[in-house]
Structures are given as structure tokens and as C-alpha cells.
Figure (cartoon, rainbow over the protein chains, first blue to last red):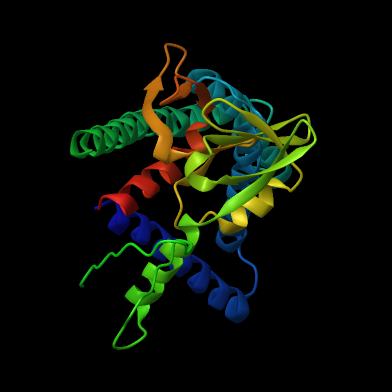
Length: 131
Length: 147
């Protein structure tokens, strides 16, 4: 199931890229195309920042997500101002958008970590019993 | 597959693979046996020692110097982390943090601490910090070992 969901996301991203690339060639740059390109660039920048946070910090899971929340909110706000998504009156919305995504990611991550630990320990235990 | 063993005195340990046709599973077996013989040269008090993968517990980078830890000894390793990473396929070695590679053959347990840090407990009671990012890689090794 996990694999199907992952493949669905990759396929959807590829389809969006293909459809918008073809549209860009035919009709030029429209607001929708700009938005999709901006979202891809934004995702890349946030992923890059998250990679460095994971690689260079040894924070506990909550601390790690707090740092990611601050960094992602900062990037989204900066990007939003540049792309014209936010105005001075509604910039705080970045905190809500990022917050919702990160809360979901936190629960998925915590669940997956617990499941992986249980899997590894059960394999060690069965190996020890066999020996 | 037929498995035979025989004692030949005065000869080094020799494994001969006889196959009707060279295929992926024979190649996998060949690689696996080759990896069992893998060793690294560590230095301790001006003497060089060959450390087999099975004796290696973990490798740690401390202030840009690499150290190989066995059950009771520590050796200085002159190579780079990448040298170990390049040959660790099909072995129990796995990266567990930016500075540490662990041998899962000596892993006793993975624990989640109260502060949600992850800790690997080795069979000599040593504890290593595991980065959550590398947990799926450890899982992959155990999946490969016991599918």
C-alpha cells in the first residue's frame, strides 16, 4: 500500500510537470503554470533545508520538528512575499499551512519510527532464539 | 543446492562454488562469501592489525579521525568513511549517523529514549546514537537477512 501511495505521488508530480510543460510550450507562461513551478521550487528548497537539519543536528523528534517548522515557515513566508502569495496582512497564514503539514508529517514519522524499531527488535529476537 | 564440507589440513580456508550456469543467484552467493572475508587494517600502538568485518562493532569519526571499535579494542583507521561505505553492500554494516557506521551483526536492541532519541545497544553493552533518518536503512538490512 505504501509503495502504491508513493508511486501515485511520483506519478502525479510527473503528470503535473508534463501537462504544465506542454501547456507552457503551447500557450506560454500563465499564472497557473507559474504557481506550479513556484511550488516545485519551494518544495525543493524546503527538502534541502530539511536534509541539512536531519544530517547536521541530533535533536529529539519534537525539537527536530520545531526547527523544521521555523525553517519551513521562514522559507514559505520569504517565498510567499517574493511570489506575491502573501501580503503584510496575511503573512501569518504561512505558519498555519506549514503547521498543518508538519503535524501530519510528525505523526506519520513517529508511527513509522515505532514500527521500524519493533520490526528490527523482533528480527534480532528471532535470530537470537534460532542461535 | 548441495553443501559439502571437508577438512583439508595445512591449507587456508577455501570455498569452491560449482555451478551449472553463472546467474544472478550464483553471483549473489559469490559476492556474499567474498564480503565475509572483508577486512580493514587498523593501527594500535604502532602495530597494524587486520580486522575482519565479523569482529568490527562500529566505526566512528571523531574530530575527522576514524576509529574502528571491536568488542574490547579500538583501532585507528587511516582510510575514509567512503572507503568503508563502498564495500559494505551485502555485509551487516550500515550507517547510523553522520559520524558512525554500525555492524548490525552485533546489535542487541534499538531503543527509543524518553527524549525520543534513538539508541542502539550492542552485544558488548556499548550504546550508540542512531539518527532517525538512517533507521529505514537498518530495517532494510534485517529485511535482507531474514525476509
